[in-house]
Image (cartoon, rainbow, N blue to C red; front, side, top):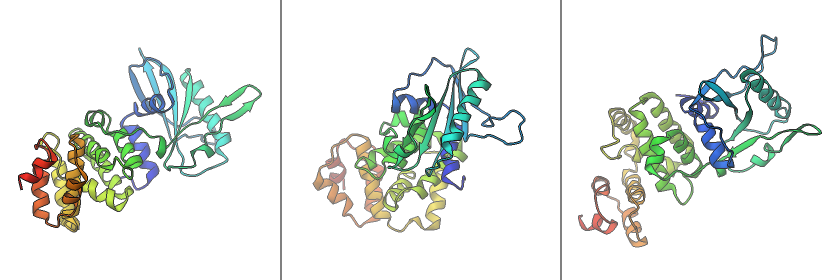
Length: 297
């Protein structure tokens, strides 16, 4: 598992290079050229020079075998005035190497402060480099299961950005579906996503996340997920099961777009019985209404 936030975010782009154009288009409205493939290219910019010039990641869009857009991706945790000088170098170097237009995408893993690094960089009287900075507050929210399955990397970023907001349940429910489905293709990376969110989210959101990963519907449940949950329980996840399962029940109902009144929500959250909440979890995927869930018990 990646040990740093920096590595984890870059892994999302490495696993899904289309994440870069998707974010640029959805967040900034950047018109993408037609392309058939997005490839990770070497981030080293120099040509056999003593001092190496290296970006965090470079993604090149190809159409009919030709590069049509090069995207330099930088993960920036803090403001660094030196980037004003190095970022333009990255763009000009990658533009020259691939002989196509280039754009700079900067990931800022904070809710605030992105404006400090998004100021256009003047190269001269009529030349400007504009960093396209995406912070947690501007990451698109994913609550649709199909979208999360199609793009689990975007769903993971969405969970990081929005799991503390009012749509927590729907966001995490969609993300769990996406990550579990991804686990069928790449169990190791799916577990990386799961572990990273477990550590990065707040205690309340992380508990709901871990619970959701163990109660997904049969279509998405897989051997790697069952093994993950069993291991987690052996390490002490049994503590607070009733509360975690109650929140998972609400997440599933919200994801299925079933109406939950305040009275029903309070009743579910107040349940102290882990066996009863476990029963609700099994039924939450099939009932026609939240009231039906409670009537059956």
